[in-house]
Image (tube, rainbow, N blue to C red; front, side, top):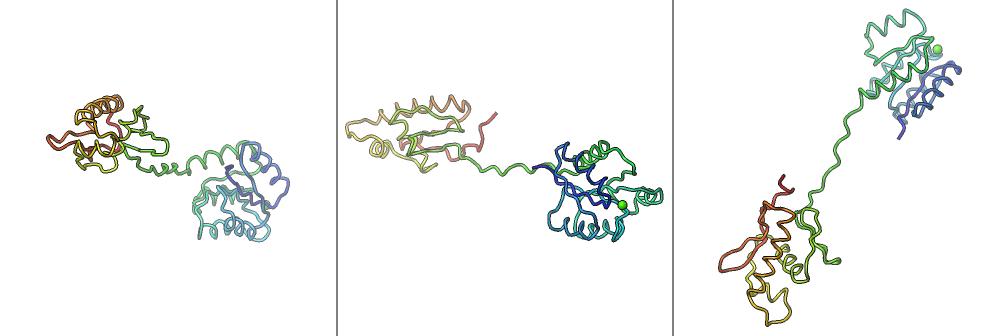
Length: 233
Ligand code: CA
């Protein structure tokens, strides 16, 4: 998005020059010639910055500035033509962001605009990070990610980890696991143990310091409930 800069200036020649200079430098200029239009524009389409001529046909730029400040903090750069105007702006009784005296170099004015916008830019808010659980099971693809890393799992390893991950902290007995994951009833308890062992080895490659599958002596296995939200450094 190009920053929108509103030019409030009743002299078309100056407005044209400014619009051209701003457009060339990557801004999106808009131009109005009166104070009333300026107020309406700032309300309707809040610009990133206003370049405000002091001598306007309907009112003074100072008056426009005061009225803008009633509802907007938009940065304002005054264009001044007379030394008494400059004195007033410089006296900062108005609190404008900057001023440029006519005649001015469009390039210099654009440089000021750029620096004011940089100064007033709020640091972008970090995008909200949805917490990703350490284990993400994709049943459709039969894939499990562990801290984002895709685990290469055999059919039984997948079934085992999927079962454990469905209820972190819950202790599954070997019999229950055999029943849920293995379809032939001839498998043995040590089948479960062997697969837990290979599963652990694969998870260790991703998180060497963690113990995601806990052994509960005599009763079975459980997925750790206290896995950190992100991989320890
Ligand atoms: Ca003027």
